[in-house]
Amino acid sequence: MKLKSKDLLGLENLSKEEIQLILDTAVPFKKLFTQSIKKVPTLRGKTVAHLFCEPSTRTRASFELAAKRLSADTLDIPVPLSSVQKGESLLDTGKTLLAMKVDFIVMRHGENGAPELLAKNLKLHVVNAGDGTHEHPTQGLLDLFTLREKKKQIQGLNVVILGDILHSRVARSNLWGLTKLGAKVTLCGPENLVSKEILKTFSKSVRIQHDFKTAVKYADAVNVLRIQKERQRDGLIPSMEEYIKNYGMWSDKKRWLKKDCLILHPGPMNRGVEIDSATADGDSSVILEQVTNGVAIRMAVLYLLAGS
Amino acid sequence: MKKPIIDSKELNQLLGEMARTFVNRESSQIKKGGVCVIGIQTRGAILANRIAKLLKEKHRLSVEVGSLDITLYRDDVSEIGNQPIVKESHVPVSIEGNSILLVDDVLYTGRTIRAALDALLERGRPRMIRLAVLVDRGGRELPIQADYIAKKMSVKKGEKIQIQVKEIDKKEGVWIL
Image 1: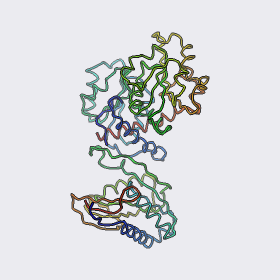
Image 2 (image 1 turned 90 degrees about the horizontal axis):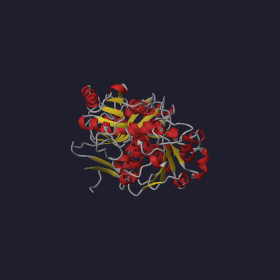
Image 3 (image 1 turned 135 degrees about the vertical axis):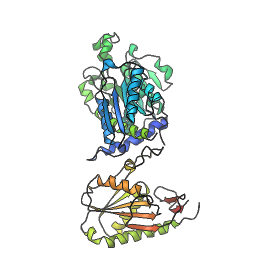
Image 4 (image 1 turned 180 degrees about the vertical axis):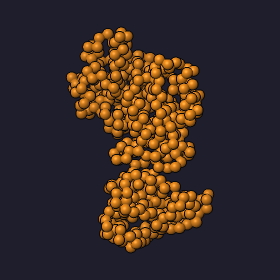
């Protein structure tokens, strides 16, 4: 069993079996973390370049740890935001890295499809660490891994994705992954942040529900998305108070959830906006486990791509 | 399917002999305690379980049993197209200062054992490691030999040794395919 593509660009182009292979492979990697030596020699001699053209702390740290725990060498490419231009110059950076015999480029970029541009033109492995509003596949995978670990299987789960669906690459990767593995997804948020367009892409297993209480009634998990403060400036969220009242995953709304409903958040959290501290640190929260699982998932992805 | 080279009955006899030889030959080490039988995933781990059971029940030894997955220590990751499935390792005790009996089903090139030694030594410094295999088929590519061999076979390069055990397979025995 192997991955068909040499790159991981999104969950849209992975089959159900490929997603399951990645999740299965991450299980033994996670177990490594309980050992005093968390490192294995698997990718010794390989080089992973981290090309982050957008700010990121946790994803970058997670990828770096994943590569280091597989004994790969890591290379950080500082990209001053101002000097990054579209098209040619990004490809030139990629070609330069390839000429230096780099084996993997892990990249984050503000433009949808930027990782694909490199993947198509370069004979090395490209891992998308988030591109524009398109996809953030490893986040999707680690969310699936966390859900599967807690709920045994994804098939038949009711999952609510809450917040700014429109601009969220995390939501997109989750939608692809969850629907492929047979979960039922409810998108919940204010009307101008949950576009009906999305239903054209995703079939019957996805619905939109603007009323929080109705949306979460049967939920096995709520994935709370980060609310970007800029959205308020752009006029998409007229009043933050009203947003919090209707859609903030705060402890006053927990009585509407099932007792065993899990709370996920891709981080970094705006405590007191989309989620309150009592919920983020409460018993139903699996937010820190998502972080641990993220490293295992990224190790599994690097390992599997190395053989594809 | 062809008749097996070794059938289930003989397989168990061979394991019994192997356990007996181990007890006799390593008596001074065994007296010091801390014996751990560790099998290489998947069928080596099953054979290790059986040997540990024999050591406990027939020879009244107190031994620990564990399993080791060597996938991540292979020297051919990214050269073979198919990435082998990574399985879990389960080593119940610290191996520091203990005596390890490493068990695998077939000894061929020696590369698996090289990987297993690396995987083991990462976890500490055992007092000694001995290697037991069910079948030694020759064809070594590395200078590695087993201490306990249940059966030596000369097998041609294109031929394959298949070992099946009742714990996970339908049949039990050793076949040359």
